[in-house]
Length: 333
Image (cartoon, rainbow, N blue to C red; front, side, top):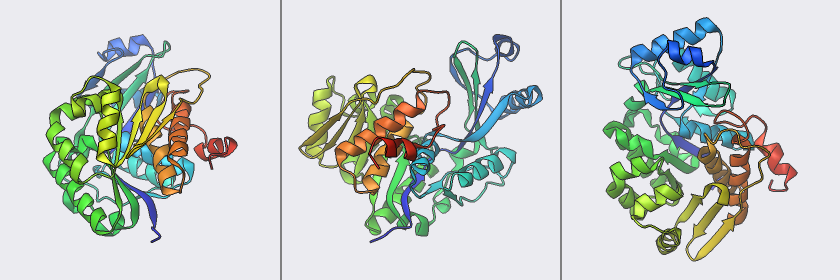
């Protein structure tokens, strides 16, 4: 069966606002250097206004799943994204940014409730990234925002673990899973982070055993899921499961597991490590591209490592050059 989309992604829709600032700006606006701080709508508005006045910011659609979708688009895959924004200026920025990448995005805009989520990412000359994140409307995703015709048209439905933080968003995810199952499509889940696993371990284990076909995790997240101390124990758990596990190991590269088959792939070389933000998101993009284009599991891992290496060589969580061209140069496409 042919599909309109290679991947349908569900995640928290956040507008990333990148800004090059000096330490004086951080002090003036009481931004904790090098930290990620959750903030409220008023402070997000005030910080955004300050950056607009300084003329120093760049805005783009963000959030973990949206970053993965951008990577998929850079590789040449066709995708559709589901995530909630408000009918405001930043909501329009998110929508236009996704569509400019060639990603279909038709989630209804919110006209009540919170403003569009945003993450101010202030970068100082020493390379430190200081983040102030307002979650806003992204937490208001509901089952009504999930359109069956979009999910059923995707070969793989990819879901962000962070959506479990809100009951309605969790219900939206479960609706998408049901649609995907009925359409004979695969379901992929990213565990998002080890703290997220800690909050929802029992539910994630249930998904792992009963719903999910493809699992993305780093070492810490996998250890937290199974409550084991060694990576060898993680591998044995994944082998017994039988699905496809794509596990990142930082500078050690990745391991792709399917049943008794274990594929260890070294990290792609990086001339200079600049910023690891988005490495896992782009790794997932590379693996998902490979899985939807008939690549071997080893080549899926290589594509993931290639995409991750590109994004950690610069600031920002999205590719700055065509991942497709990079993959073609290495013979992976």
